[in-house]
Length: 239
Ligand code: APR
Image (cartoon, rainbow, N blue to C red; front, side, top):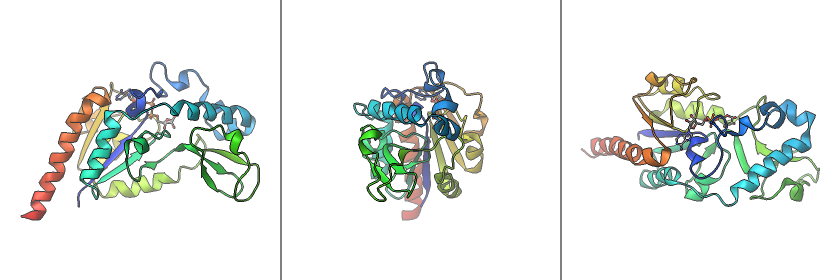
């Protein structure tokens, strides 16, 4: 069964009103990454970091998925065994769109984790202060379930495994500053890139198709390409 892997970044959620990191009004133009998104920053000022993630979690409450999230959810329903959805995003818009089994490489804002026993708890859009005691070990060491710079991202191993069986990679809305998406494109037979504009961190020649459009405009062309890609596979199997 052919595998199509969607690998997304902040750009896919931009039109839902969630800020990206490195675009014009991106989060990293307003906040110092090392202070609010690094292991050292967390050790230096725990409260500042927990407040930063409280604000981003609360911001999610009224955000709704856009046509690009919906496109992936629809394709997953049509081709349940072929579509793999992996994201760098920590928002819950894929879940709100009805996606099943989204792999969050950098964690999830709606969850918190106990630093002592590892217990993970879903808290929706609440502030972490309302859930500071671990329900399991009773220690007061709950933190945001988000991978910060300087920390391990265990799901990167899953991404590497999934890429081995991927026939079509679809990259949407990432600058490639953290994940070498052009290297990944070089590892698979076909790869599509959809961003607003070229990124210094991405060699676009590695991709079979590059679309410089908003994700909500590109998603119709992407869906069509994925459907015909998978349907050729299905007809081959049926012959
Ligand atoms: N449609 C499509 N692409 C878009 C849109 C849009 N409406 N808006 C922005 N983009 C693209 C930009 O062209 C850019 O390439 O999304 C990308 C956003 O890049 P970043 O802000 O760097 O976000 P991302 O690549 O997801 O960052 C990766 O960095 O700070 C860490 O952990 C954080 O997961 C994040 C990682």
